[in-house]
Length: 114
View 1 (cartoon, rainbow, N blue to C red):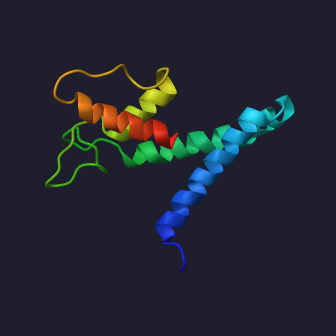
View 2 (cartoon, rainbow, N blue to C red; view 1 turned 135 degrees about the vertical axis):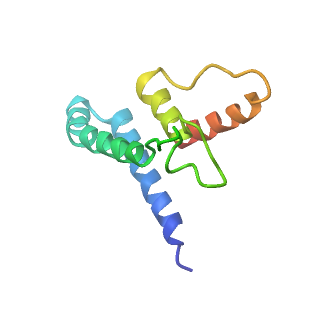
C-alpha cells in the first residue's frame, strides 16, 4: 500500500533532519564546514518563509493560525518556537498556573520534533 503524500513528506523532512544531525555529530571539521556552507542559507530561507506565513493581521493575530472562529493572539506557536530556538538558549522555563500542563505538552512536542 502506498504511503500517504503527507506522511511521505513528513518522513522525508525528518529523514533530512536526521541526516544533518548525523553529519554534524559524526563529520569531521571539513565536512561540517561544507555542511554549514550549504545548509545555513537553506535553513534561514525556510525559517523566513515559515515566519512570513505567520505574519500578523490588522488585529494583531497570526494570519495562518487564526480563523473567523479561532482567533489567536500573537505570538503564535511558530513564532514562539522560532524565538526559543533561534534567539534564546532553548525552551522556556517551566510555566506555572492553569496553562502549565498545556505549555509542557507543547514544549515536549517541539523538542521531540527537533
